[in-house]
Length: 335
Image (tube, rainbow, N blue to C red; front, side):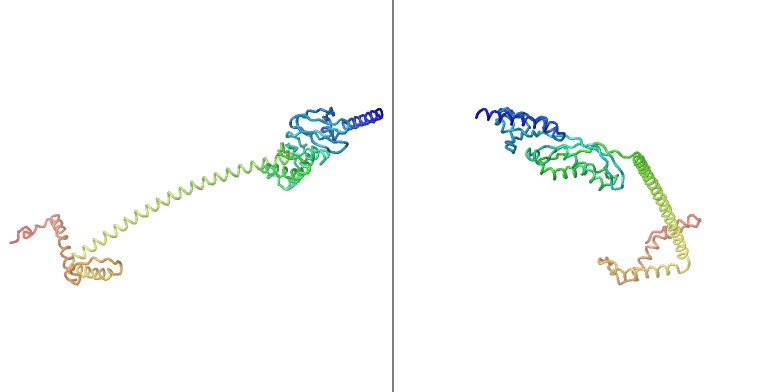
């Protein structure tokens, strides 16, 4: 009986070793199965690693870092998952933009395994699956943008790719941390046209700046000429007003020197007084009236006396300049 059990155990162990050798030869599982440790009953799991154990071909448990014990023959370490951040190079691929320009683009993918159970049984090859998903998402996102926006919205592209990978990665136990575009290669002709376009934009900006400069200079010169012309016009207006006023004074002086000039002046003063008195209540609510407002004759007489007093010195000066002797009665004191 014991001999039969030993033979059965040896056969199972031999079959297990053959199966492990076959796993080593499978290309898709090379990364995940090449470092599978053997069941030595006492196992020490390194930090930041998760060992997936199967018992009799069925998932049993996940070994935590540190000391662990397994049953020989029945327990087998099926997968070893690294919990560190993994960096994957996304191969260069061709993509067509919205304006039908073919681009060559590659990137770098940063991910981490959050659930070793899903990463082991949810997908056959996590690395290959994530890489293909990143490539297809990149082609899809580039097809929505024109060539000019591809270089300006690299951060938006990276964000969209990360979101797409995380939506599918929930079932795989994988979390995409970030995606970075390394290089974007443009066809030579398109690159030359882009350089010419940038040169044209630079020249256009220079021409616009020069135009603004010239317009400001012309505007300042025009303003200066306008101020000069305005000042000259005001000066001519002042001179014209002064000449007109002087001419009016001369005409008034000649008119007063004629016969009945004083009577005409008295009439003019009386008319102006009456007109001004009639407009007092219309133009202002505050009135300053003399004590004898009803005595128009007295007001006119007072105005004419003021005029006569101011006119005497002028007559004396005119008499001295013409050689006419002064009136001795003016110097005779009143009795």
